[in-house]
Image (cartoon, rainbow, N blue to C red; front, side, top):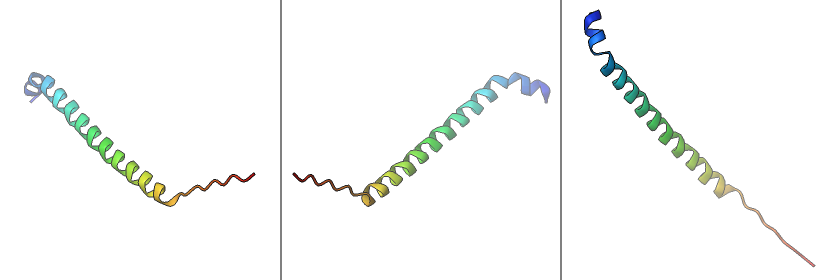
Length: 54
């Protein structure tokens, strides 16, 4: 078992890093969608009126 693990250590590490990077990409995209939806929702609610009189 130790011989197999040491033989494929580089591939195991590489695949693990690629899997973690994929998870980070998906989580980042999901977070960006949530933030965009929150900004769009707030944008519909806030209204600023400015009146200047002399």
